[in-house]
Image (cartoon, rainbow, N blue to C red):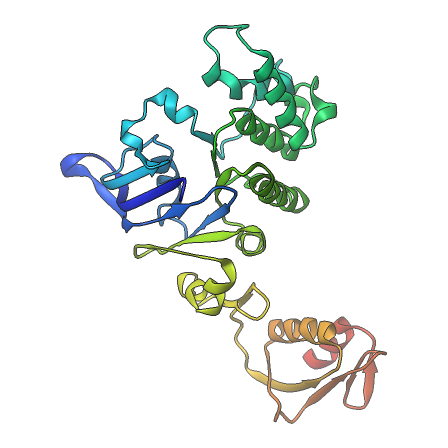
Length: 323
């Protein structure tokens, strides 16, 4: 049984006569222990859907249920016991330690300052452990790197101890190593804790690798749900992100630029890695690789053979081709 479901959900802005519907007819399901990545072009309504699912923004039509009960029937405190939300905004707090920030996740369970229970303290400690920040407990939040701060915010959501965690662009301000680590961490947490995690993200390549399921939102309306590989193989991914400037390469899961290819050349090699990167370089230089082309490049262990001359690098080969 899904922990969260939507039924003919319509989301958007405004009220009554001024309402603007961004997406409608959404029927989605989220299961425990599953990490879902919400993807789609800019302006398609990803953040609006996240806010609506979290109960921050009201749905225009349809229904959202958590554990079979309509979200409209939950009080704000009850929602806080079901959903932890991590927003994309940078958090800047002075004179607060990592423990202080993570402890805020226990707010729904406390009634007064200092009312933290031993069980609550244990949850905070465990949340900090899960994001590998045990040695940062007493550190000031403001002294941390962006990646460390994001881990603290995830720990805060874990300390809230909800079955659902929503994250809106959790890797937006991070460098590549931290983006990879955060995505892998969230995937691990979903599987180890049994929590259902939804991530709104632009990290298409990492979402394809880390997500158990993808909700692919179309700019013209609708959300397609499926495992990443199915959405690639059935062409849905390429359809949603279709552009004159680039295309989605279903063979390697990357986006490739649509260069103007005015020249032709053939290439042969037993080394698939060198072949792949040679193709990329040739496309950038305006070459279309075709088997029957007059000019030919043979890739060997020693380098690139062209016109009976050996070139030891792609750079030197391109210099000859451009000449």
